[in-house]
Length: 139
Image (tube, rainbow, N blue to C red):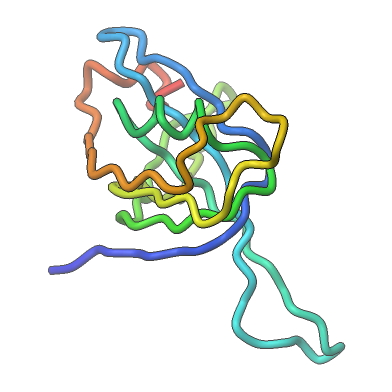
């Protein structure tokens, strides 16, 4: 069986870095905008907004070096998880757990980001039950 996804898109906002309550493992999340490869009936391109999750060292690298608008390539796996909301309703979250994030453009001049053009990190982490708080989400 194979679960692999490769995306290229731009960040819609700065990454959010947090730490798991049990172990303090870094986890960062951000969303990228990815254009669909066709135009709709109005002649416009539609865009998908895809949630990306990174863990450990890769999370720290992304949080410290990525900002809104940066172009990235993400290689990872698709994950669909669920949890029960406070209202008792079952909620589903679809996200890409990234194994690799490549920075495809340069940081804007004047920013405090590192000068390297690309980071290719191969860190993966699948959270265990200890890394998820009581509501079934890692935050």
